[in-house]
Amino acid sequence: MLALNDEAVTALRGATLAGSVRLGMQQDFGEHLLTDVLGRFARAHPQVCIDARVARNVQLLEQITAGQLDLALAWDNGGVTWPHAAALGRLPLRWLAAASEPLLLPQTQAQTQPGPAPLPLVVLDAPCLMRAAAINALDRAGIAWRIAFTSTSLSGVWAAVAAGLGVTVRTAVGVPATVRLLPPSALPPLPTIGITLLQAEAQPAPVTQRLRDIVLEAVAPALAAAGSVPSAWTNQGF
Image (cartoon, rainbow, N blue to C red; front, side, top):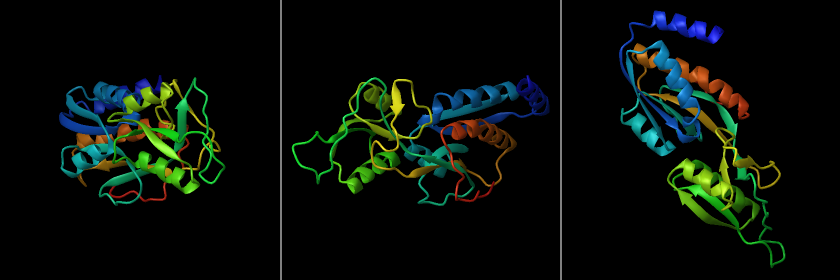
């Protein structure tokens, strides 16, 4: 009831907002978070046209750089400093496997052969931060691996993992019921990854500012549920 009251008050205050705004979001957040964000914004500001895009990380970064998006919720490994960015936290990367299939762990290359076949990986097409993290972790641990399935979309990755074709690396955000998080000790340790809200302009239009506020409010519980830790970065321009 309190949330509905807040939305009603916001709608009255923001009734004069009009125009359009462009939002991009990572596939991990697109299915659940985007629905919440669009619903809240549309109820509060029915006169605003929203252009929402769910895309891979590299596409979001290209589009925000080219001025094709006003806001973008994206992964960040800390390698690039983006202007007008809010670092929202860091999420632990996790190994994931099919919920209904047993996991046969491989031996290290140093162990006596014969042993299990190389660990099958289900990954997005390169370039992909999480694909690179999985391969680097296995290489450091001396565990043999092979690419069993690649996809251009996260939905394809989820389907392949659920079918038992291999394991993958993502965060705990948006994991479907057909896939399970493996215990941290099951496979080599993985790093954390940053999540950031990118903004195209230092001083955006009021409609963009309002959408940014709703995104920040909506993403906070999702990050907390996925084990977010405070970011080491500072907010830039927010």
